Image 1 (cartoon, one colour):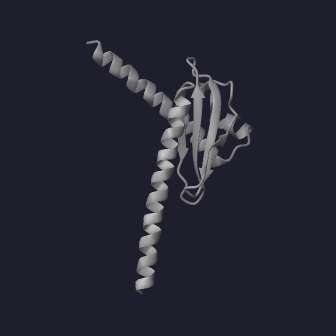
Image 2 (cartoon, helix red, strand yellow):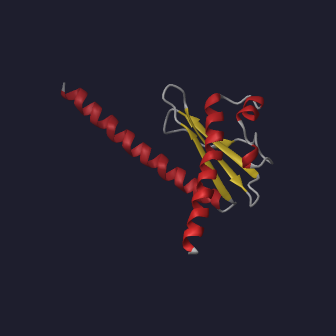
Image 3 (cartoon, one colour):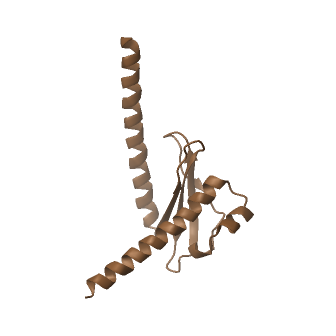
Length: 134
């Protein structure tokens, strides 16, 4: 019985350490990408399917310069190029476009999430600017 408790504690500690390491690696990666331009981030949580995280580097006109994707179930997943939408504006993205690109449903959810999150961010910034000018 003591063996199982020790094993459970070890697994919990390992998961915590590896999760923290992944989070730190993600933050450093975002900092690096922000040197190239603004970054739109989208995600699709994976309960039964793999989780997906999409990063789009965008220019001043919200045109996608480059995309990256991370998908997987473990803390060992890393970012890979995701260039399906390069050259399009963030606001041209749609569910129909995702279907025509033949990407997975989880990837499509993450792509559309990036668009929605960026729209929310822009709205918040606009409201802050209006409130600050009064």
